[in-house]
Length: 59
Image (cartoon, rainbow, N blue to C red; front, top):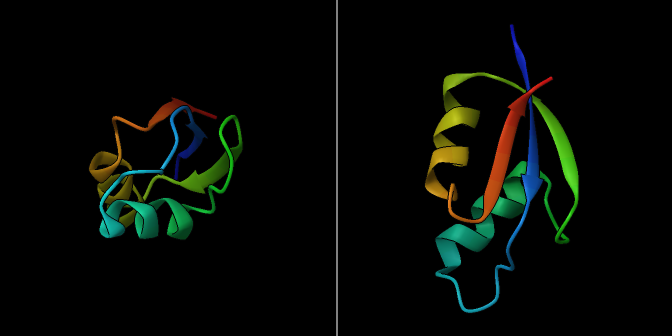
């Protein structure tokens, strides 16, 4: 499987609870933090849900 890097760009303050939980499930806690995940459909769906808060690139 391909790997993707997900970087948090914006804060989760004043965001709906489901978006906060999605960031937490991706392993993101701070702005500027980068995590690496397999590009599975479930991870891509989570990234799509918070695409306005994160950036992605292929690893």
